[in-house]
Image 1: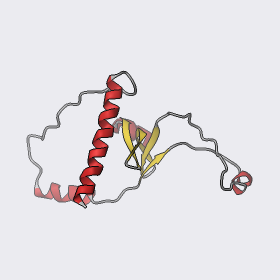
Image 2: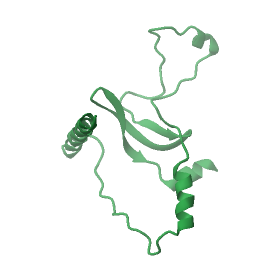
Image 3: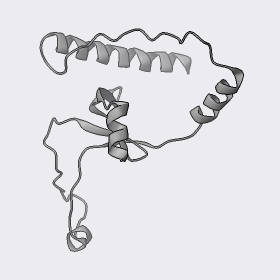
Image 4: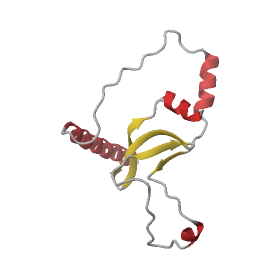
Length: 134
C-alpha cells in the first residue's frame, strides 16, 4: 500500500515538473520566489497551542467551481442525459477554489494517474477576502 502511495506521489511530482518546464518555456503562469517563513521571536504558549489545535480540527468544505449558469425551472426540468448547459466561463479559464463558499484561490485542473486534482495558480490575499465579507 505504501508503494502505491509513493508511486502516486511520484506521478504528481512528475506532472508538476512537466508543468514547471512548460512555464519556463513561456507557457502558463509566471514563477515567483517566496520568502522563507520564520518563527516569531516569542514561541507560542501552551494555551495558544491548545486554541490553535482546536481551530485546526474544524472541518471545512472545499469546492472547485468550473462556472455558473442561470436557467429557468422549465429548462431545468427538461434536462436529461446528454444535455449541455452553457457556463459563464470560457474554455481554459481558471477555476474558482471555494472554502465554505468563500473564494480563496484560482487554479487549473491537472490529471495524474486517472485522478483529478487542482493546482493553485493565484491565492486571494487575506485583505481581499476580508473586504468581500463587508
